[in-house]
Image (tube, rainbow, N blue to C red; front, side):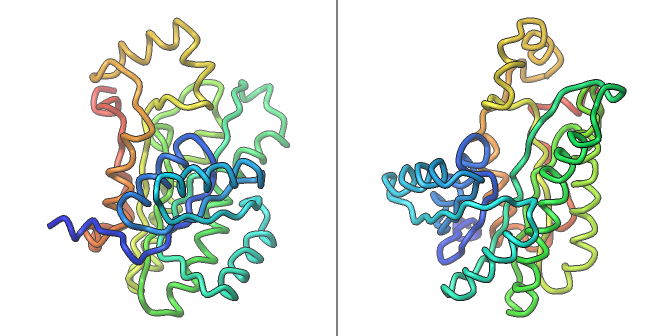
Length: 255
């Protein structure tokens, strides 16, 4: 049974994986046997993450590029083609947050959030899927959604729109690519202890709200997303397609 979750011989690209949730997912997929490709916008932090993974005995490489830049993404995949690197799993994790009421939100900031959290998933997955389809061997796309794929909160309108878009983009990928043995699914994290959320953790009122409104009465940890990521990247989920699995401690269940 454990062989269903074995990722040995597979290569996984995890965007935005130099730190936070992305790094935890890269580490988890590597522990399941995958060779992982770390991505971020800064070459130094990508190199540090690769070194950390290699020091743990995992197979890792890195490439710094902006996932919102279509040319940069295409160039990265072209280079992997030349190097004989076949990407079997894509985890679209890159994301940013920008908190401001909608009536005060500048269009440039709206576009930046949408481009990073939604459009990048389309750009990266498209390049990967083209190659998966041509090879005829199938593949796995795992998009990182959010609680805000289902439920809105004030001051994060752009993020909510992007993550709602991720839900429907995941379904669109499934509709078009399932016949090519590509499974496209998503993970919807709840409130997770990450650098991006540190200001919320440090806010006593918000911290108390998270703990009181969640049946688990705590924040989640990045490593608690790993099991779902491995499942959706493995042979254990070959007939699971177009779904979001929420890893939220039960928060959505009690809304």
